[in-house]
Length: 167
Image (cartoon, rainbow, N blue to C red):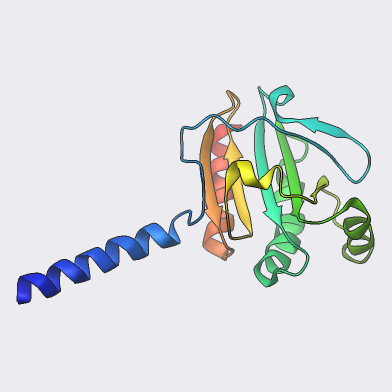
């Protein structure tokens, strides 16, 4: 009986760790970043295959997502100013949002990093099947080197450290 309980507890802990670590992701560290192209709110076309040689942060969010609305102001205040003039590109992608929705929303938010719509989840579906905010860091060769789901201070610090180490 004790072995059974111990086995169940071990399984529960293992599943919990897995669930909290990139839950819903379709990719893992070391995978090549999936090909995609988005057009930002200011009309710039960004194709991931043209960003090789740069460290890239791909952020997925939604305007109705509480954790996303906590994360993005911190990204604007801390991450974006620190790296925007480096060999770095950030693309923040509004999952299931149109350009018009995001333009209206960003008029009140005032974010200055690149934001692009993904109204049909065409880009998001190459990366994950659920949960936002979701972040992927891609190295200069086009490989995923870090990913995170949700938002907390520790995760933001990890993202910034990973970007800094790979510039």
